[in-house]
Length: 274
Image (cartoon, rainbow, N blue to C red; front, side, top):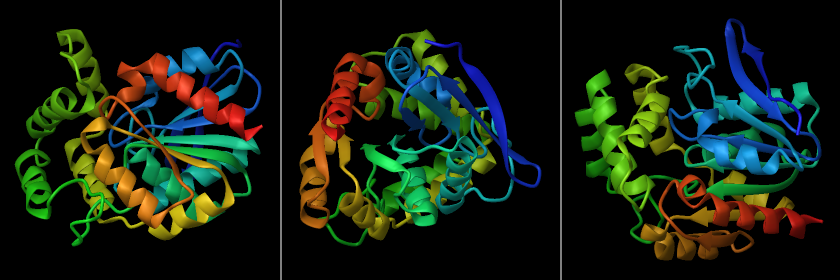
């Protein structure tokens, strides 16, 4: 395994995104979710850099990437990711997005298509997070999400409280240690609350259904789902995107809490690609 190299790519005037490369081999790209950073994939980097060129990226306004008032939406995040692919000349890549990082992935498909992709893994995020249909897989009722936005995402303290609640109640299935909780919260707080609020709002109003349909028809696509809504999510994906394969275990952050099982699932998916 080669040493990691952290680098920056200018994706717009005055706007840089941070990324790291680890190891050599076929490219495997990881994108974190809302307000999170490259650090969240620590277990995947350690495992897959033995055999792959692993690339982890901080999306715009997250982690060590530039904090900007412009482009805090998932279509622009996808365009940024397309520029990274072009800069690194990535081909036959497996692209993995966690949570709203899945929306970055679908935004990438919107801008760049699927020609550079060998396979895609989406971790626990609907392509259409809000819907009026009770049969759809959504983040939650509109009133509940609007209430969370109003209550939590208007101040730094509110953002901290939101992440603490979400980490303990949704992300993992066991008790977090104080150090683990602090690590999760510190990642989120690299995005100021006023930018976190804008990104959250855009995520809720996205609809990348057409892009997921295009993606699934072009390359093998796997969604790994948290247990708490797996029945609803699997039925939604099967009904609307029958080519998408699904797996389910753990909570929203199952790739971290159950890293060994997730890494085995991803290894099997990659091996099936040939």
